[in-house]
Image (cartoon, rainbow, N blue to C red; front, side, top):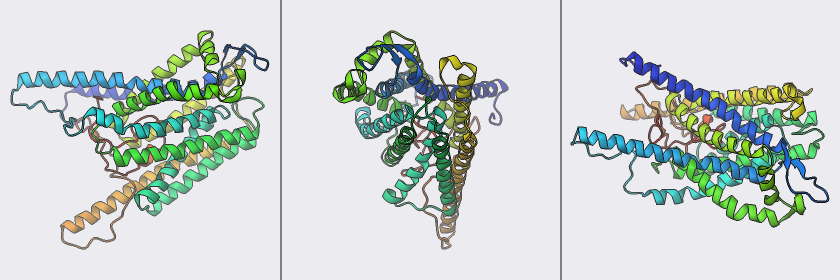
Length: 449
């Protein structure tokens, strides 16, 4: 994959970095989902009341959301280190060549970082709402179903782009959307027909409610993507900084507003509360759940970093393929946990309708790839129309389309550009929650800075 004329050693180093990024995305991407679900299934010693023993499971979706946003916040540390490293390189370059101005390609003198940070508040709120809905839904459904249902984001994002941004789809886009809807339906029906959720004896109503919350979360997240793509496309802000800021805002809101609110609201948790934060802290202190939570934070940070490297080096379409493999790995790990360690009570088993879930998954993947072909078709038509105009010929029905130009696989000497233009939504965005491969921000991201 090295560019022509590169030294062999440099080409090998670049290749190793890419392979490490691919491996990291698959490992940490799988880990984030599996750990989020596993935390709900692990027991620890907490508080007790008339209906709850002291030894009970950590079914704390609101606390789980806080842990996830804390993990995202650590992306700010990586961003800050990368910025300092880039500044040092510029300073050394100026000493070597005084003619250099020292201006960064990513600098934006017209917009301060503080102003940019405030703009991120709106998508951060949407991300918070979507994450809460996802984690509430994850309580009652299996990790594999949860992961697959998130493919519904593509459908909602396309609808929002048509309704609010007045975009038009070609027939290939519509085929991809229909396949996506069919795949989501098959996945959902498999869970309902099997009558099984995240634990033995889960009611069908609870499973349906959980799936509904996850699908609803994808509608919110699609709105977030539409907002980010339209308002943040030209903000000239590094993706890791945006992820970290959204994590910081989410952490503050969860800690100062939401967790205190759910503590005082009535509900099914210990003490008759919606979620007893004191019980959550006690469980974290007296069991393995704290280790799982810390691992979840670390995995979230590393997943975002690996995702950026993969997308910048290999393109968003390749990232989509890897995200598909991530879903397969989540399913495989769940099977291993269920059959390999039955005493733990973790994971999920094979049901008479697992085949239907597998069919739905395949259809989802095909639908996403077909939608991407629609992006490519639209881009080709617009390029042809532009060429015809340049030659003085009347364009033949130029296509107004949802996505920007297709993201080709670059060579080592050709870093990936992240600017597809405002209001674009690529098929590759639908599988990448909490990671900004889905955003089309200016600048390459081989080494986030």
